[in-house]
Image: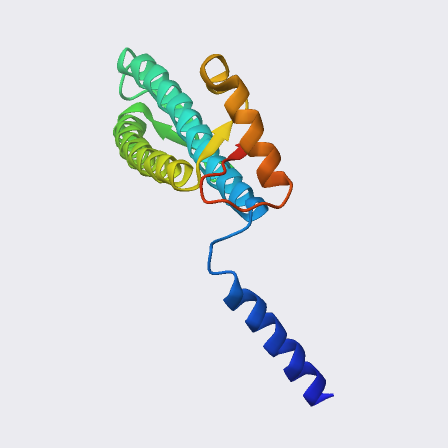
Length: 161
């Protein structure tokens, strides 16, 4: 048994060693899709935090017009606690600032991810469906047929839907 597993191990290492030309078209597409999904999830999180900032602004504007000694209720970790406006208002303003910083961080990460996606697209000549249809309608179909047929030319592009 040990000899059998070592021979399969050497076969897999030989096959991976022989593929020095790069990842397959399926691997390229999968990696590209994963990177796009990561960028989408960052954008979704940033939009969610933007809505939180808008809610904080609305509450802050409302509480500024109220007597500071008036009691108000705040939900903290699923628990509704009673506080005064003068205690809650600074905490809300601080939370709003922290959320703004997080949004800035996410936006810079999205820009970095966008640059990585662009570099990846250029490296593997990835074209999205519907991209440049007017200019390269005949050209984009031919490379995609070649790459699907198993021909791995360095100039062949990958078509992603």
